[in-house]
Amino acid sequence: MNKNNDFIMVDGITKTFGSVVAVDNINLEIKQGEFFSLLGASGCGKTTLLRLLAGFEKPDKGKIYIEGEDITYLIPNKRPTNMVFQNYAIFPHMDVASNIGYGLRKEKLSNKELHHRIDHYLELIKLSGYGNRKADQLSGGQRQRVALARALIMQPKVLLLDEPLGALDKQLRANMQIELRSLQKDVGITFVFVTHDQEESLSMSDRVAVMSQGKILQVSSPDELYEKPENQEVANFIGTINFFEANISSIHNEICTIESKYLGIIKTKCKYNIYSIGEHVLVGIRPEKLKLHISKPEQDSRLIEGVVENISYLGERSHYYIKTEGLSKLISVSSQNVNRAQINKLITDKKKVWISFDNDSLILIKKNNKKTSF
Image (cartoon, rainbow, N blue to C red; front, side, top):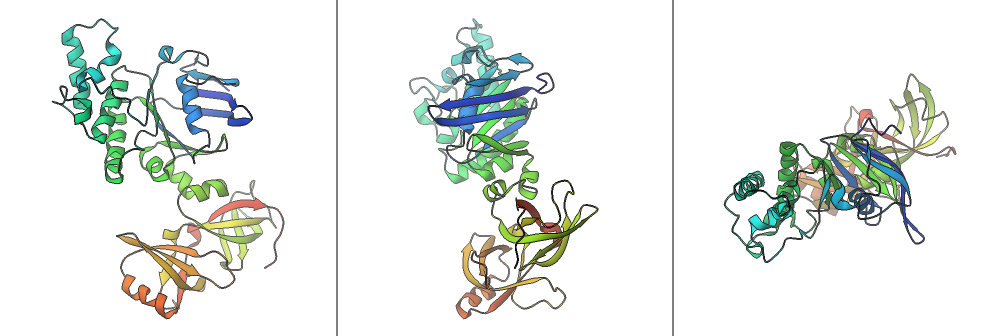
């Protein structure tokens, strides 16, 4: 691995706690000025990896570089990083200005320069005029902004954020996501952000690394993760997806012909060097890519037939769960609430509905090479 090409380089890092492998031989490259997220369920290793970057943990093997410098065994305060924690860690006996300027106390700045810097970061976090407020007079969102300003005022090359929005309520969290992304663009610092919330990572990040059991499953832009997951675990973790079993019957010019009991015979794009003729695959379709019909469309022969078993009302849209004969799992269809009243009646009446799809909406996922007969 060339440690000079990327801003942050993680080279074969492994970290164990007893018999538990928390981080398993991870290689990772993060670009300068990037908003990069580590995403995964609890226990996947994302926080341990962040703590390794911060210097709070030491690896069993591997190296970490920032701007080509080996920082693997540097203590935290010698690294060009700073960290923001989920619990804010605001000093309750200090006012806002003192909290923000706490890290500058050893820099021997004049009072004028100190207050100038603090005022600058108060303005940056949209808390101008709050310098004399005590920590217990702030809301949760305001405290988190103060924690961000206290980290940023030290002008680190990398800001590490360990689920910093986890303690906020849903509406405040959504607002803070927008503000945090805007703040990152304003300061131009590389952010490495840990979260278990898929929507949070997709809405804020330039790129996302999906982690599971100490390994990185995929590193991609948010749209690529959602539209082109590389395996079943990523596809399941990022959003909701419907899977159908199928076999590949032919491949020509990176177009696969797929045979499926429920989808019929269809053609879709695939890479010739990844898939092979006769291979058993999974075909994924996102709920919003499916269209629900309350009467059978005459012009479309590729239809899935079923009955509506349940509905989840989500405001501007609803999720419809369709029972199809022979398929054990319900098919999820997301639709804007236009014909909701008509479809609701179909639940009581148990009348048939039809689902249509476009070939471009299909996602091929590798499973195994054993052919399945339908």
